[in-house]
Length: 440
Image 1 (cartoon, helix red, strand yellow):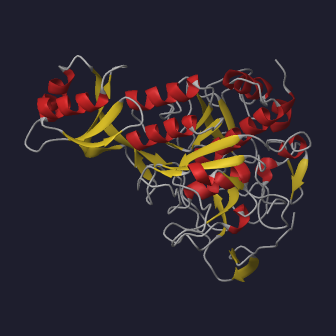
Image 2 (cartoon, helix red, strand yellow):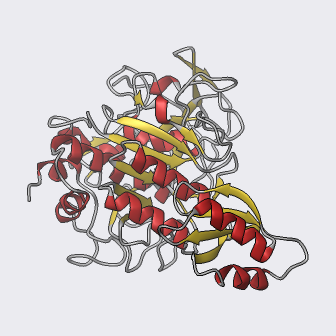
Image 3 (cartoon, one colour):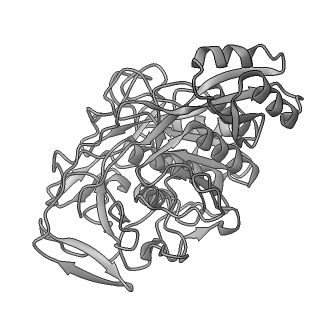
């Protein structure tokens, strides 16, 4: 891995494959927060009972309540625009009177869990280190041991769906493929954008590209950063817009799409504070098809895990920093399953000259062709560590069920906090090397 020296005020950009340095750039350190929960103000989601004729039921809903069909889901639900001048409770009660309607709910909005600060493997990617490896002379005992895991597997044969803001995976229109994803495998034929409803899931925010890098950044290519399961195949699915927000129906569609197009693992570095039948049904559908569903726990510092991470079918991931301690922003509680490095840009415990975020290549929001290496923090960054390890486990053991993959990771995790499972660390810090060696 090529080592590039950076000063405190340097941003490194890759242009046409070469590293170029711009000096005198400020170092941005952003708090990784999530805005207050919102809903799509004029929309509801109506779920139909199994076996009901969705087309006929759509017409029935329009006749009963005056709501107009906005878009259909991939399974038994549809999104309707609320009629003007009617109380929302009256509309919902009218629709619920139809015996073929299973549920009616608001269409909530989820938000990406991280924002970037500014900018290769050593000394910056402490999160992937083996125990005892040093970063700038400081011993790291809280990386995920990816280096040893790579002697066994690198994720080949496993498809990972990244349900996010999209990925910089192709040269298309005004979008450019990230240089450090040049050797990464993508399922371009099945990529989908549920925000713009087309087959090009390009990233216009930067969040999804950073997440993709942690899972499968091109590795051993003499540039930039490494990825955990860098021989895995990435399926880009866009459900969040350029601001990092997206509706629950788009996320549900993304989950169903991933399950129907060959994914074995889903990563969702997103979430909201409200539960949703539509979202839960989509999660159950993917889980029943054998997918490993990995989700960020949320960045509110609260004792409740966000949705969809809170659903039992999902692996809810909290966030740790260089010294192994939980980061204060990381949500915790009874639904938390495991933790992984998510970064803490407020400290520099490995003394590399930067706040201890998670380093990957991406771009600043609004500039999808200006690639650089950025330290992000958040449970959004922790979740893809676990998704990447899940891909390694499935690559080494293709016949494992989703529950066996979960057990492999949870039972071999490095115990943190009080002995055994606890609400702050779950079963502990994910250990890639131990997980791929686990057998039932």
